[in-house]
Image 1 (tube, rainbow, N blue to C red):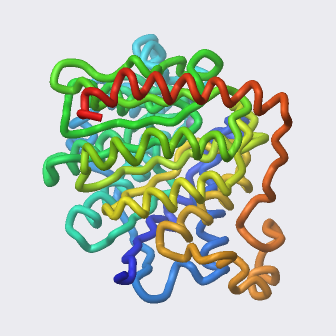
Image 2: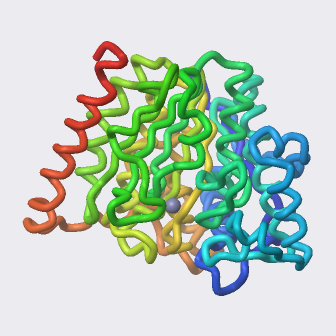
Length: 378
Ligand SMILES: [Zn+2]
């Protein structure tokens, strides 16, 4: 197989931005991921490089967001939070206002769109923006720490150059903003694996939500029960994703890898280790399509950064057994936040957990088979 050409999107400039200190969303996860990868030599070498980017210009943002929303974001960032901006979400607990809010959101979006260009132009097989994945933002809504929906914009851009785009989202929260954007379109399939909306924000994303009009069958939702562990997620993924990906046959995949499904994440209730994210990444790479990957949620910063480093290592083809032992000695001299190896220890699954999760997984897989598969002749 040819060498995977992989671009990592990060810069010292984006590393300077921070949400307010009391906000659980930590932008520093991107820089942490970069440091881990640089330490093990996985950012350089044949076919791998780091790429800079510019803020997405306002006319580009207006392809998804309304002018009055972007005006409100700029006004709020400048200290003028009015009733109309508050009504759009600005200043609420999960969309705190900070001075560089607009600049950060536009720059993070610019990174994702640069990655979209690289895969669209055939310059990269894989591009990864750990500062991307703001899937909750709506045309006129800030929500869930998301202001500019970079992934929806990337899908819009990619759908111009390609016939079929798959947005595959494994963040623990439903990718509502992207789904809503493409709900009536057949050229962009959205597929989201997330903790069920019965227990978690944003409360949407059920198997019967399959799209509308021409888009019927092109929104795929796989809600997971609290306590979902690695083998259960992998089983749901394998039952749903490969047949639908084969049927849809996307030209390109936008892959949102929120790591907030990890056990111990303070905002969610799944019980995954990063081995599950690694296995999903392995399967996504195995689809053989160009992949634009982004970060997303992940509220335990160290675990999130390690998961993203592991996912990158797999997407770029370093997925031989225990690859991550490579360079261990050198890394331990340079960092204190990593004791060696990127992989989490496997977690023991209790009989109770299994009894609670397995039937729910069976039900959701069956529901997707019932509601979506027939629309694709499956
Ligand atoms: Zn999330």
